[in-house]
Image 1 (spheres, rainbow, N blue to C red):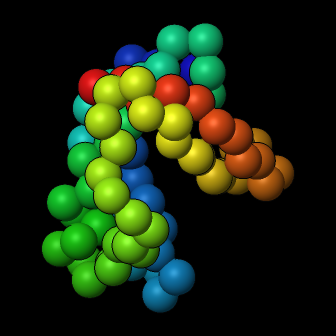
Image 2: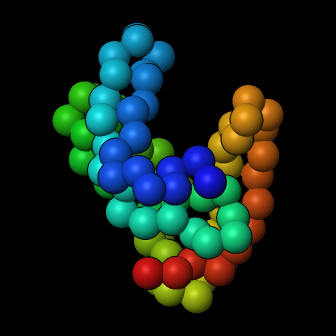
Length: 79
């Protein structure tokens, strides 16, 4: 529901820089979305390196702050 109908979202970085990001898709039935990180990279954000890229069907871990509360979970990767 967070990105329902949205084509972009805005991220606010630690230094208060605002970056507009394209929504690439949402996960039905879950409060999750896939976004294009290129705007974050252009703003100087650095990705963390945690291993090999996931393939469809691989388990993946997601962490976030939905509705202001910390949440973490595991799911199967989808393309």
